[in-house]
Length: 283
Image 1 (cartoon, rainbow, N blue to C red):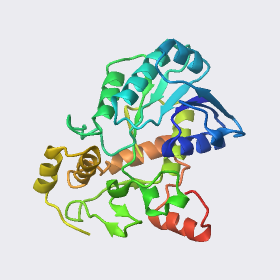
Image 2 (cartoon, helix red, strand yellow):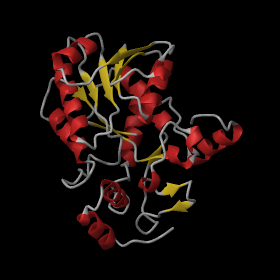
Image 3 (cartoon, rainbow, N blue to C red):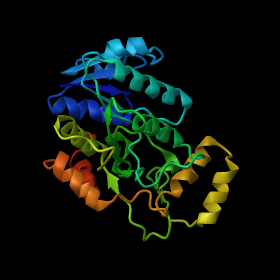
Image 4 (cartoon, one colour):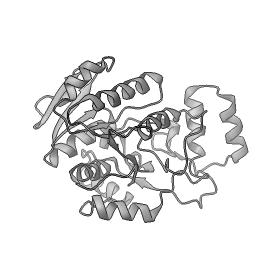
């Protein structure tokens, strides 16, 4: 099976590692040559600017599935993913599509029209309105990787976007501190997706894998839209108190049993212990 991975950021790197480790052939679509891909067994790099659907059809012609890992906070990336969807439709066999996003419970909590993450919903809407491609959005909750130092993860520092900031030694407690939320290691997500790609079962549209600010204060800051960074930060602060980071555990267990029964999803303690044992490991 040959899988196209779009993007080479934190998610992209983990998908390249784990899909290849699972015995899948990997085609990486990227805007420019990436030296870290040189010499990787079972990995092919194909450069594109995503502007030409006919070119994308050629690049994807011998692929079976496309996994997108782009950061869809701009119209540019939306246009790229729309072109990829259209290209997959025109290919002979690339008929499975995983959109980027990898966020919280987007099945029950659609992104607001003013949210910086609204572009993910645009892509899902397009997928929902067609019947030529089988697709699923992978829901993971907060990314667990940020609890370890930057040297031990692919994802770059996100500053105040993540509740825990190791550099400043501060933590933001969303809501009252009693709300339940979900969190997953990106490498474990990639391992689970590898099993999902191998599964002959039909996909579902969604697959589940200290200071105080009042909700009114956060929403007031969001309405000001002072900058992209501040808007994104306060937008994410609302996710936990609104329940958007709590995945339905019945659905989580259902999908785990069906698609990834042999994948061990690590706990925060296990990630920290791995770094303690090997300070150079990428979790």
